[in-house]
Length: 85
Image (cartoon, rainbow, N blue to C red; front, side):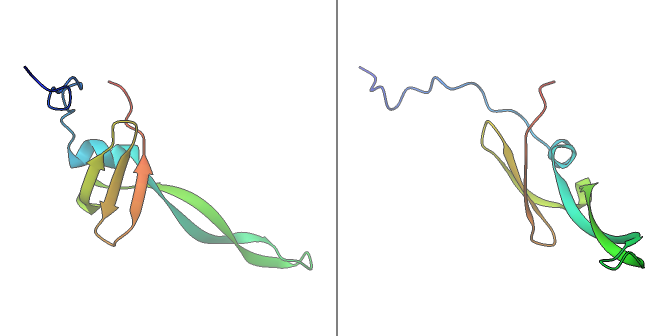
């Protein structure tokens, strides 16, 4: 008689590739742009920008079902959701 703990009723695992998970995550980069400082004089001010991750930057990834965690070659951990196809 099979034990409930040994019976696997989960959905089959998705076949993910580095190219697919790279499309699901973005990293935040701070860039300096022209703007106004505290005294209303022209100055460089920081602005956050979302930059896509390339397939070559993906070192490793793990699918958790609801989201995916990607580790990049420079050591950043990025989280994103897989879009249904």
